[in-house]
Length: 186
Image (cartoon, rainbow, N blue to C red; front, side, top):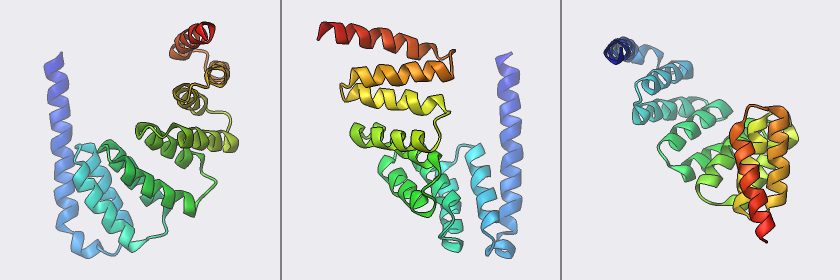
């Protein structure tokens, strides 16, 4: 069974590579159209060529420097490359363009969390919640940041809200138990 799955993935990758070659053949005809570069970047991501994707995102950004989606996409790529500072810079630019998009704050919180800047990560998750309080992942991630800041009571409140929004989030239940043990020891 694993062999047929591997073969299927390999065939899909071959098809994506063909599409990339076809796009790149005609690049000079479309080099003023950012959507062309974004399509190429997406194809490069499908074959896990993050450096190639980043190259095409950079080209699209030159054509439309005020497009928040390009900064967001670049941030996602840099995050995958574990370049959290680069991701932060791009998310800052996306937020400057559109400060009402909660996803940018959440993603920036993730980058800050990876850099162990928990206080600022907490602030960004709080901003994402302020904009949209219906996503359990925002409360869950803020709980993790608060736990790292040793604010266990607030972390538990966030985890309880996570469970209210998504009762199937079993990891939240497990963390609540552990945090309560820590609180009892204090």
